[in-house]
Image (cartoon, rainbow, N blue to C red; front, side):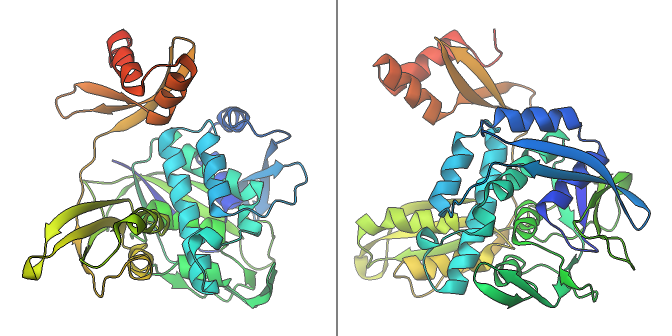
Length: 389
């Protein structure tokens, strides 16, 4: 299994991750083409080399139109969903921003829907996250790990004023993950970098033995005089299948008004849950009730539990570690009656493949043609079968 190890000995940020991925072998032409496919006006990318204490690094920076946008989570998620990124990259990018929103909400004592993104809602942060999530998939990485993350010292000016390093949201995002104070001055790890690493790795440490393939370095903005300010990524082969590092979280309710369940599920997903479901149960004294079950990484466990307590009437939750097996998958785009339809293709253990069209694309085609979505789905399956013939 192809693994990627983050080695943030000088911290981590979105642009450092992209620079290291370029140095690791991500084709610059692919990155330029991917950014062009996202449909953002006036955006260009500069890909160059930079030296950090005699280490040759990749460096990526965006040239963007000036904007004053201070976005909410819903605005960012809408931008991600409308982008041309593969569905898996969009899912991971959305998860990263839900983590950011959950961290900000906890710090400011508000709900994730009311969080007002400032720096991390800017277009360059959205591009950092989307490009990183798509790039690791393009390079074929399947498992992600991190070494302890350098957090820096001192103070930093952010939109809310002068705060100690690391910024409050950054520290909250790193909950459950190993960090280290190396004496580096200033902000070493940004909220965007922390969100990407937390989403991909869940705080998992590298296995005791791996086969190293190559390494890549991504330059930070500063060029410190006494140490290299860069991120190292290590591409490796991981023996065996690593544990998924997921937790099942369960809560039973018998006194919650059903109409408030859907927003509670949205909040739980926004807090970082991988999935959440509700089932009907018969509780003590014969009362009908419901059971909420959420799946979350160890890094998101506390945030998901907090969301359950905040959004539901439960007085307690149960949780335990679980493992998960998933099928290999990728996204493709087909054309059906003049409409672009994304399909998620999976490969079964037998080698057989099956494909499922994305519901939102099916619905858009159905609305345009004036027919029922279920009829569109049936026609796509009949006219463009999973084998593409």
